[in-house]
Each structure stands twice: as structure tokens, then as C-alpha cells.
Image 1 (cartoon, rainbow, N blue to C red):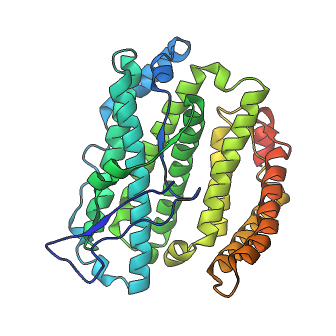
Image 2: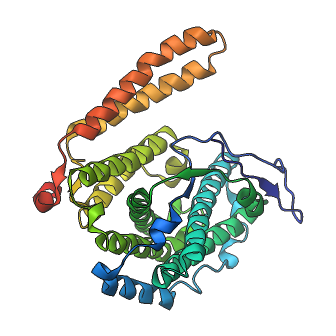
Image 3: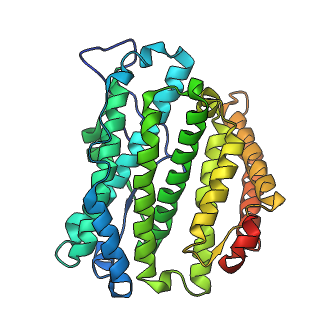
Length: 362
């Protein structure tokens, strides 16, 4: 699958950047667009947790950040003040962030539109989620305009590719995505409040309120899963909880540690940052998931580092023009098998029951 996105030059101030840029090849580490069984979601009976879902919907109606995401004069001249390398790193961060937020908007908007007749409360909640994601994507796109670039969201909408997930998989994945987003934003915000000299852009001043949107979204999916206890009970559900925790944590760690430029620009150690975010997200997940991962076990990160090194070797092989394709393939197979083995060991490592999490975390 390939995701197609277009970065277009701001015509009023074109700059010296190529007017059109396609996003890189899609991998597990890039934002994706999802679709699911809408009829199954529309048929969800919320009565087992109706009160909590209604309370969360009421919070959404208050729209705490309605007037928060407004670009101000603090942004003037910031882009021009960055050195070329840092400028490119920040632009890459903005592009990935816009795509991620926009993909969430498309999913939530479609769900809201298609379930409103059968499940109006659920439709309203999804509409509020879509509102927030669209607001985030639009604000980020305006910040990109400072770099004489904007993401062509119309083109992205027309050319998006979908990954199909069953509803319960959407709930697991989206819950974790929102919660890990909360911890990523608040951790960066608090760090930069204590290290203002590392703040590349006024954009980071918005992260405190931004992360609260992420947190409320996660709480909604928490409530939705509680309304469907089958998503959290039984051995199969236990395995799926472990799978999605590992997929989300491994994806973030492998991406961030392999691409350190953004964190270096902020003065952050990506390994230290990711380990803190993973620990906190794991603890948040324990409030809803029956089991979580033992991220404090030394082998957890040792195995991820093996995969990271394998990925580096694979990248070097791919770029080596002196090796024929058949030989490259032969050299890649052991690396693929090694990474697969490490992921298998991580998946089957003894999980931590949420009943014992308090002692586990400390």
C-alpha cells in the first residue's frame, strides 16, 4: 500500500522548496487510513455503560478548546529563524502530524455520518472526535504555511488507501493511539516549559490543551470497550490486548530511535523519552486492559534494540548498489527471521495482570 500526499507551495510566498512532494513509501511506521465494519459499530448496545458514554459526550459538547487553536503573532519569523537542517526536521514532523490527525478525522467523520440513524449518541461522540481532529490538522497545516508549504488535504482525501480493521481492533488501536498521544504531548510540553531555549516553535505552547483532547478521546474508547465486555474478557481478548500494546510501543520506539533528528533538535534523548512515554501509557492501559506488558523487564528493550539494529542492516543492504538483488535477498532473510523471532519472544513474554500493576510500576 502507498499513501499519497502532496505538499504544495504557498503561491503568495513560494520560497525555494520543490512545489510538490510525495510522502515516502508506506510502512508500519507511517500514519495509515482505516476502515471498519460500520454496521457492526452502529449496532453496538451502549446500555451496559450508557451513563459514562453520555457523560463523556457532555464533556465533548463543552468544546473546551474551541478558541484555543488560533495562530498568533508569536509565529511570525520563527520558520525563517531555523537553520536549514532543523527547518527540514520540523517540516517532516509537521507533515507526519497533519497526516495522522487527518486520518483520524476521516475515520471519525465517516463513522458519525453512517451510524447517526441507528445510534445517535455514538454518532454524536464520533462527530466531536472528528471536530477535534480536523481542528488539529487545520492548525498544523497553517503552521506549515509559515514554511511556504501546505498539505493538500483535498488530494489526500481523494487518493487515500484504507487498511481494514474489525471494530474491536479499531477500539484497541485507537484507544492506545490517543493515550500515547496524550503522554507524548504532555511530556514534550513539560520538558520545554523547563527548557524554553529548546522550544523551536510557539506550536509547542499549544500542547498542554492539545493533549487533553487526546486524553478525552482515549476516555471515550475506554467507555466504549466497557460497554462491550467481550472485548476485554477471555483468553483471546487478553492476547489481542497484548498484541496491540506491543505493536504500538514497538512502532513508536523503532521509529523514534531510528530517526533521532527531531528529538536532537529539542535536546531530548529519544530512548529516554520513549521509555517514559511507554511506561506511562502502559500504566494508563492497565485501567481498562486486563493485562499489560512487562516493560520494566530488561529484555523488553534489549529485544527492541536487536530489531533496531536489524533494521539498520537492512537499510544499508538496500542502499548498497554493488550487491545483486539475489544476494541482497539472501542476506536479508536472516535479519528478517531474527526480527521476527525477537517480536515473537516479546509477544509471548509473561504479561502483567492489572491486579498487580501498582507493585509492578514501582
